[in-house]
Image (cartoon, rainbow, N blue to C red):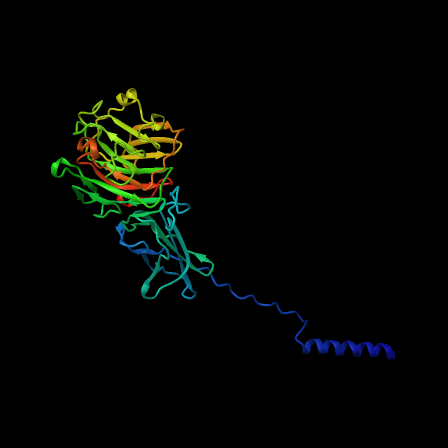
Length: 390
């Protein structure tokens, strides 16, 4: 063996020895990945208070739920509360929201409370006299739990009278107007107008802070019956005040009639609207004799009727069975264009029933009529307002 061959053999031996001493062929280690924390599975909260369908005495209630359970013991949990006047929770049913009141509220990030319960107090006034629905769900990390059962409560029974809008529930023994003469509060129904001394029937007066030249006057009325006393008996009306001015000759008189036994014809629905003069017949608007004859109705005293008058460039009187939130049979619907004159009483007075004035009790309020859920405004009645009365 020559010298070169001996060198190559020796080198091979050194390499082999080095390989054996290192444990064989060298490999690159694979990095380890942390085990991800599983997403939590949450139960639904259980509504605790207020009780289902509870009538509250506040516009800012505190809502409380029993805390959820989770299959992950660690991690912060928060709660989302939703309140709405509709069970869809996506939008309010209110077509015309009332300034200063909310018909829908959402609050996220409410920390879980100690003691097994979590609470949220509404931070702004809810719409009064309204049935509200509410629900809650919990969040833990990226996990969002299911919604709770939907519960219902009723906001405070409350009326108000401010520029451009008036609301009066009347079923809780209070009014934002003034009761004049004989009347009785009927629990859970409203205010009944009665016959007092001298045969004079009571009425309710509202003095509006601001003239409403285009608007709506609506309410629920029970206790109306055929063949009652009177001729041009009044369901409700408006005028340029005060009461001691003659309602019959008031130049801004609007009166809605359900005529009594001596009416022409008896038991007919009729209205008269004066847009600035009691003498100028061009600004007087009313259905004619044919319309009156077609509007004879035998109303049922046990039925609630929704009456709605709207005025402006058109005067319309609408009346149906079932109250403001009802879908009953339409009993009356008549519109008359009012192109001449304008409705501008100042001060603006409105009435449930009417003051007797010179025509006496026969042309004033209807005895036994029961009123509730009154709305007077330059805007349409909010759809859900008064839903707490059902």
